[in-house]
Image 1 (cartoon, rainbow, N blue to C red):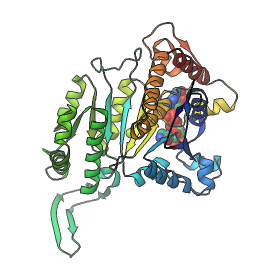
Image 2: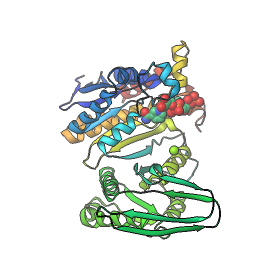
Image 3: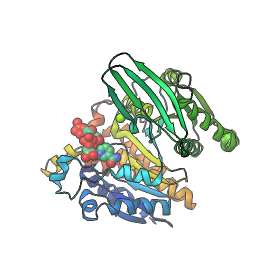
Image 4: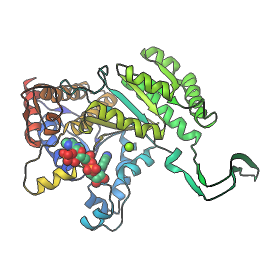
Length: 401
Ligand code: NAP
Ligand code: MG
């Protein structure tokens, strides 16, 4: 069989622990035998980040800007324990944070839906993709604990020195205060990323805030989305046969519970944090959740939503068998390969991605899966496979197709 040729390299960001082990198995078993895989390799494993003073992370993000598509393995975000474990020079920042800051992206998370793993919400037939604005609001706030009576005001000093004041509250006793912000530029980027992703995936886009209560703050989100939609996307949406609609966050929550799925739900930063955890757990498993960072310039970085599965890695190091689910990591690769194929006009690459995804899902639907899924599946008589055998089983299914 001839291998599928690629013209432009994918930016490959290798990572840590159990996912690094899966990464190599996926390449060896599921990609290299079928594709003349071209990648520009960046080792984002913690040891190499430490050795390069984390320059490798910045370089990988720059390469992503240059080539347009990256695939990333889960990586350790160092904490105090990791400082000693890896003898680190510094507590390096989260690679995802660094990459997100360079690409200025929005993160889209979608569950991988498969027969046998039913969502808790019975009417959810299709995945719900969550788009989270990853800048500002309560994540960049200033807070004051007020000890006693006094006047709290919001003050903005313009560049020319003019002050605008707004009374927050006359405190009669102790209390709390919080100040937060966002920028038109960031909200616009968020809006464009959402509109582009909706067109890309041919799904309706829902957006919701609390603009009835927050008449300036949340209302600005609503207005910026509406302006950009009217000016740049309305016709494209009509052509694609998809819809954009705005509603209040409480109405959105109620509708989501009654919906069939198959749409993108755009959320402000805090709403997105909370709702993505709710949606992903309701769909079944973190190991069945994909994640893609999309920049307003149309640069894509695909990854799994879960971490490096540290507990399994220690078992692996101790020579014990692991049953780690590789589905989200496989889908990160297929997402990136499909996008590369689309950008370079390589139909075979796009078909390969579709087929490998199908083979992965069929393997599970045929009752062969890792332990995490076996624990929640509605299928009977399932076979629990170890990390490696699950990947090999997917290869068998693929080859049989
Ligand atoms: P995690 O790696 O997502 O794992 C948490 C638990 O979820 C695991 O112990 C396992 O449960 C289950 N799990 C997650 N993925 C699984 C899979 N593919 N197959 C089977 N079970 C899976 O989160 P963590 O343990 O909190 O974090 C570990 C490291 O990952 C940390 O250093 C963190 O910084 C990093 N992290 C990276 C990213 C990223 O790069 N995007 C995201 C999150 C965390 P059981 O042990 O019960 O089987
Ligand atoms: Mg959260």
